[in-house]
Length: 88
Image 1 (cartoon, rainbow, N blue to C red):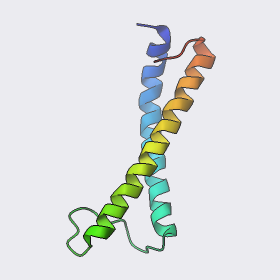
Image 2: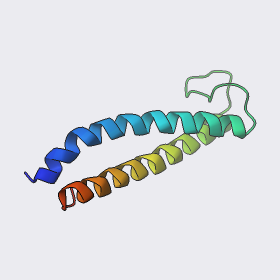
Image 3: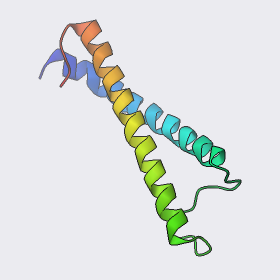
Image 4: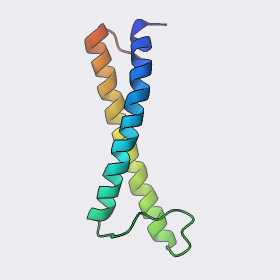
């Protein structure tokens, strides 16, 4: 296994956790910015409409995907700067 992969593995886990926390905060702020006072609907919320639940899920998925890609890319470029090789 390459040294860059060994360096990236624990850093990737930590970055993944931090990215998840960042994505959750970004989604909450986006949901509030969109004019919703309460928490985003859960799929099992009986009082919410299908439309509201599916829109919230789509927005949340998009935010999580963008944050995940940004965090992984930043981690990989940092490992390349430190080790000289790409961790993939």
